[in-house]
Image (cartoon, rainbow, N blue to C red; front, top):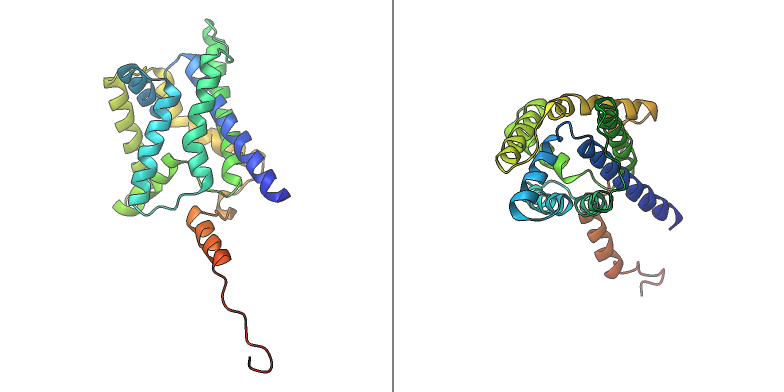
Length: 227
């Protein structure tokens, strides 16, 4: 129980930091990251918050991932829901500052990407499943047989295009983040000596099977007298 509790705490610390990283890049106001362009466009078009848009897209993506038979973990569902909840908490309560100075804004953007890298280390390392958008990338890569680079670039190009048409903010920071976020995630992994290939994820279907086994245990072996 103690180990499970520590994993849950680490998961939610990672998710909160992930939301903080996103909020930093948004308030830097140099251009949003690809997915956030779409989230902001949806928020303006539908009249909802960016966090609510993130949750809505997350639900849609998890459904698509399930159709593609990609494994979903409790960490996946937590990411889907609480990144948006924490993001709204930070933005609507103005807990992340806004600067006019371009140097400070650039520092916020790059700092936000590093925070996203640390957050990814924390919540992926828990082993409860990756985020919905990573699952979409993996699922499409398997389905199409194309490279991860091509699939990721295609997804982000599509979401930026849709977000821009809906009124999302596109700027120099959008291109910078699209090209460099991977390096910041890799930097964080190297600092913590974290190898993502060594993580063994536990998925929801495994827990369901374990629960069914607990509720319907196999018959005990007969005793030595054959009774």
